[in-house]
Length: 74
Length: 264
Image (cartoon, rainbow over all chains, first blue to last red; front, side, top):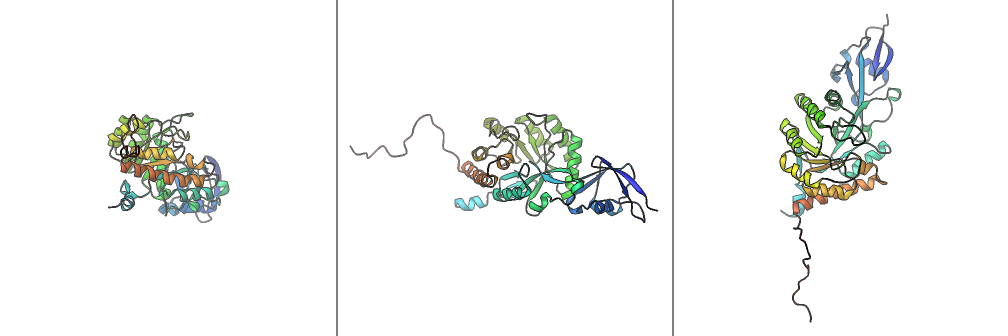
């Protein structure tokens, strides 16, 4: 059965459907959002999620995620 | 060694990385990313400062800085602009490290507008936390010789005091203090903030700074690409003048042409 998770994503509450065969991973979330994993970094509940572990980091309702990238700055 | 060879060998090193350009430029406040890329190329800079911010999730396909400023070509120096506590600075730079794999970072903890003056208490706390976490910290700081020495003793890899408030373009307002600070520290010493035009950058380099960091002076010039070129030359000229050693100042004239052999 497909499960849904409620995440706080960059400060906004959003609901995502997990894949049919299990929970939603960080890799799955980034794919759903259409983000290039090489250009972003992810923090889950104030802890860095290493890029090498996106596929095995499972998300649960209530998780707070920050997805950031580089922009122009001085 | 002739002058040209000497200039080619005149590199500087921070945290084990060696650079030829003594101009570090910011990537903010440009009209668009295309102009950002063109101005940075014209500046000849090898290091660029970048900010870390939330991705706009409603427009995931929007062009990103990396598409215009190639991280393989330029050393990204992530900053902590907008962080007001040590915890925010550490979280931000951990994300930056994960996004790009860089340990070399620019720490800035700022006080409130309108001065955005370096908050040294917050800076000390954040520097300590970052160094403990394995970062190599280039630190923006007040023009305070004691603070500079303390930051160096803590393990900061470059000391970067302001010449004037961020984005003010007022130029180097504190040359005597900067000179005194330079004598206190052994790590690279950069003027970061305050430069308004090419002569300001040259003055900083003539004082003996290792390099200059600027952003608004290029981005807010009427023609940023042209100003980027001007800054490149100003930093090189100032560096050469520093190495050449200026003539002594004297209170009075000293004729350049001989006073003998004049017709009568």
